[in-house]
Image 1 (cartoon, rainbow, N blue to C red):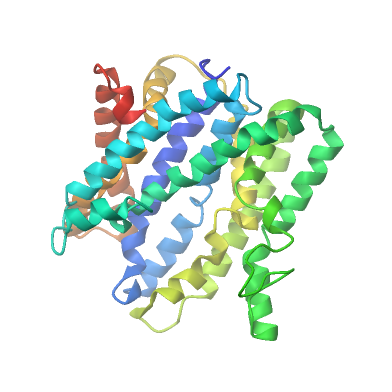
Image 2 (cartoon, rainbow, N blue to C red; image 1 turned 135 degrees about the vertical axis):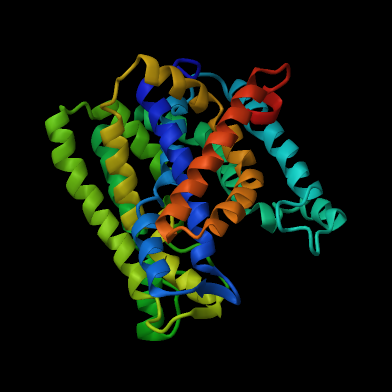
Length: 365
């Protein structure tokens, strides 16, 4: 099934890729200065409205991959060999490019020797979007371990796991509650000498892997039932995601505070938090009903195939694009949308072209 085209996944993958680029175009409107910088209430409003709807993009990527790959359809060796060609080699190529080539406006203090040394342990911070690939590798490593379980577990057993995982999506807020009530953020066995609490082993992105399998195996609803469930779920998740972020923004502008404020604001934006999980599952259910082929799909399919390459390269394009679009004097939402659209278009064309070249799969996956 890995090599088969599932139509709705192609649409979803393209939309999720554009959503990620939109997220990165929102960042200059609340990150900067001492770490957290919001120029005015207008920027605060639009970042809250737009970005809160986009945070499910990363979970959607995990779910699209899991829908196809989980449980494994081949032996572990074959699975890892295919993932290495598709994921690891392009990651190595682009990690080197980001380490050696300064992006637009980032040449000051650029140290390629230090950047190369940093790669021994992690991605370079100016290529921070590559964190996703490291996380994805961890998910792939876990898949062969979970595959025998999901093939044998009952529907009820899978539901119990998903319910338990859903509790872990409350952890960012439980940490804040514990800090406010007791002066320490640890919960359920966590401590400053132990980060592995009782919820640790059923938390994180593995939940999206299981949910994707559950949806594929057990959910085949009509459009009416899908919308009846998905729309209220998405709306509730969006409200949770947006209200927390908005409530943490100071009322005096400009806001120029340390990074810790942005971290606090983003608690509801965490990819495995309750609001984001609800919006991700809701959108996945809706897209699962899409089965449109024809001219539009002829455009979507090649872009979907190149989506990993688009993700890897887009920061090179985005910084230059945003710098130019922001000089046009447009309103905040238009600056975000146009910067994202231009970045997505250029990156898509480049990734599709590279994918058709000999050896292109080693560059864009």
